[in-house]
Length: 78
Image (tube, rainbow, N blue to C red):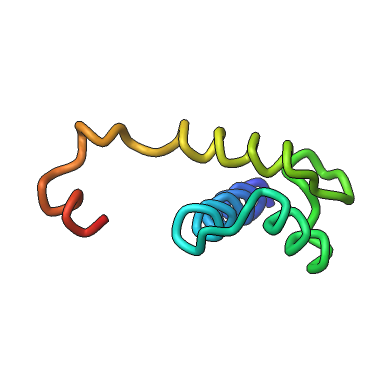
């Protein structure tokens, strides 16, 4: 169960990062989208707020490898 929860959390963080970084959605738009889907926050609360999305993005960024550690191929792939 813990592995499934960790996977679901990672997928949610990746989805939030994609919405913000690649799709250009604002923090408010992401919060609205997640709330409309009934997605619980990372702490289990019912409602997302822009500040919670910002915290999730900050956490997601902290789990990503530093750019300097990426190979030239990985950097080119984006």
